[in-house]
Image (cartoon, rainbow, N blue to C red; front, side, top):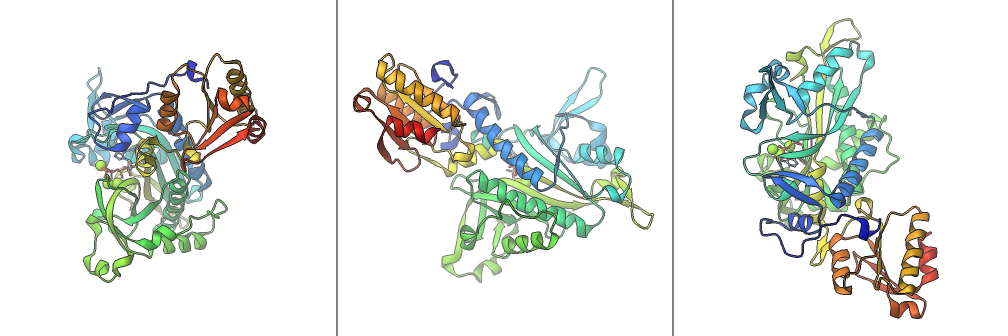
Length: 439
Ligand code: ATP
Ligand code: MG
Ligand code: MG
Ligand code: MG
């Protein structure tokens, strides 16, 4: 992409409405524009990062055996009346009436709808296990939308729903998502710790929130430092090996980790001071086994091996990709701006021409740009006539992992400068070396 042809509305001033750094940086870097409280447009740079995050989520859901579908945002109220949640959900639900006076709603989540899909088509235990997921916008009329995309009213969610014959197999479905989540967050450059979460009237211990530690997090959390040393399960994890999955989950649920609702002062007190982390955290994902809560009232049953009709055992698994953007920036930024982890960076490399119109600069920048494209990279070429200082500030702000600076002075000696955004390291190299590095 040539910056002169791009749409990157950088803000020079720090927006006053933004209370936390990720919100400030997303506005300043021209990633989002607020359209109403908690409702945002994603501008090109924001859209690119969001797509990258969604791609990682998809890859890991697919790897774990989940199957992608797409359910609508608008749902009929009838389904929610069947499950008994229509009235119970309260003012967080955006209720809509269509021209025929039918009650509709903008989905805050999709348990009812996916259960309806299941009951329409699936009849036998032989078709199980099944896990269906989608990436779709949700609406929750939050009392206090704030922190930009971190707590929006309209936000993107990846929600998956598993269907199994009994608790034992539902537990394995839960483990698959548990491991997929560890991998997903790690690939987004985050350390997310699975913490025991409230299961409410369902009971049991199959509910975990995945929490990224951050001062600006809204949850109060308590965990063992051991998690910070853990290696994330590899891409070669065998998701059909129930025992291996169970061992992984056992490992990741052994050290203490709980949100304030589940905090156990006694267990906490037994830990040594230097292993305790008492901090704030951002809930980036949540997995939950709820058994027959929806399958029972909605009649989602299959014929079991002995011929009896059995309501299926279900779980749901959510990740907030839009919230993740905020969480990634909270975890990775400095004074000058965002520092994108390579895996989600909107561009792979910034190529900065310091003097547009100068033959040496134009020629070198163009060559570097082409080489990067040929090398399969996604480069951003700064071919604008902004001043040097402004250019550097822009590229620091938008946080592309690598910058290559082509200036007239260096090029007179055949040299360009390479800058690593994360470390700040700078080094000179010859134009040829740079071209070779890119292709
Ligand atoms: P919170 O405790 O922050 O209100 P939640 O527990 O209500 O979140 P879930 O119903 O568990 O959220 O939804 C799954 C995921 O969707 C969350 O883990 C989070 O990543 C994301 N999410 C939930 N609410 C919002 C929101 N208002 N804005 C952005 N993302 C959200
Ligand atoms: Mg909530
Ligand atoms: Mg929550
Ligand atoms: Mg939750």
